[in-house]
Amino acid sequence: MPPLRIGVNALYLIPGGVGGTEIYLRGLLAGLAGMDAVNQYFIFTNRETGPGLVPPQPNFHRLPQPVRAVSRPARMVWEQAALPLAAVRYSLDVMLNPGFTAPLFCPCPQVTVFHDLQHRRHPEHFRWFDLPFWQFFLFWSAHVSRLLLAVSEATAADLLRYYRLPRSKVRVTPSGVDPVFFDIARRRTPQPFLLAVSTLHPHKNLDGLLRAFALFRRTHPEFRLVVCGLHGHATRPLHDLRDSLGLRDAVEFPGWIPREDLHDLYARAWAFLYPSRFEGFGLPLLEALAAGIPTACSGIEPLRSIAGGAAWNSIRWMRPLSPKPCCGLRATRLCGCSWPKRARGAPRNSPGGRRRRGRWRRWWRWGVAPESQGRRVYTVGGRKAKEVFHVQPEALQQAQQALLHGPADPAETPQGSPAAASSADASTRHPASRYANPFYWAPFILIGNWK
Image 1 (cartoon, rainbow, N blue to C red):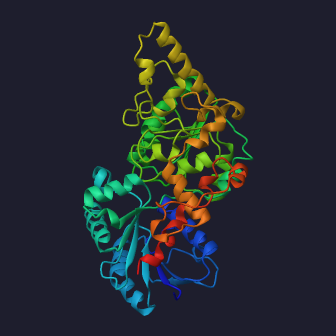
Image 2 (cartoon, rainbow, N blue to C red):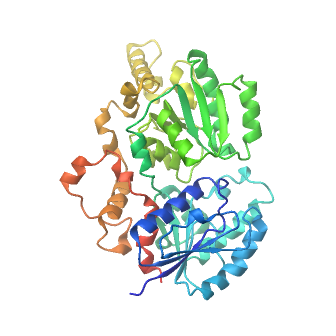
Image 3 (cartoon, helix red, strand yellow):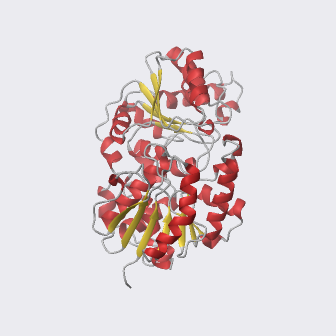
């Protein structure tokens, strides 16, 4: 089979301006460059994106386009009118669209990545003049594409629900984590601050996190809160709320920062918090777990599937939709949780109630203890720390092993049966190494079947 000519539509990328989809695309191209020296890749970039996006390998070609992504109407017009002509000019076999939208009249088969369907799940978070464009272009992009890649089962379920697509057209290819985070786990030096990595959007529940942190800081005044991420639609309300709670000197919003600076924060953070109300995947949660940080997250999908038993994330315990903290468990206020049902089920003064509440207190104290004890935050139901990473979702294990060891049948990847890893290799692997090689690579294992 001759080498494929693969187009990559990177016109949407605004460096430092599109959040996790930028990390996805950069990881995807770097992963492809490390594993594929045969197929030819043609990356269509805009004026904002410099040459650093495209790997220096000879089979990767950067094709700058005379359009700016910050002007969304101009970018959409160019994507719909000029990109199909470029596909003809370069004789592309397939076009990959890693940022939701696709040319509606492209002459070659297309594969489009959907990171979430927030515009359908929570349209109230979109500006009235943006929402019609999201609805129109994402709907038709989903229908004109030969294959859709969903980053999680939750996103795949949304695609099937809202767009009424055949199940065979949607494949789940979970995102992956940069291996550098496993090195962070070996050199952590925790300091008294809590870290949240999140765009400042309403659905991220950062207002609830600020209120909870204000109560937490009454008993732990030495702690600070650092919230890294793009300054989105909720930036001004969050700054006002921080000031009204008297947290101006205790809460930082540094915005989008270089990856090296973010790695340093992961290495020094005491604990990681992710209280989001809605997520398409939740890559920062995966990064925190790979870095070995004591972690708490909302009990929503897909966060529960990503974290498995490695984070304190049972939906019975974490209530992201109700940021009002309850009395009794002080550390629980960090994420606006209430008493677990098991503790609430017994009368407060009964022996069983006191015993159960004492157990939850012990677990949460480990969440703000030195790292030697902080690892115990990973225990769920009393499991030992060494058992933590053996409770990850089976689907993610299979997908990762399929990438590491090669599938017998590419058509079944990443959901098919993977080649088994040797027991000797498994014994020497980092306990979280199932995430070591990025899932960013998964889309192109399927590319031979797209033509």
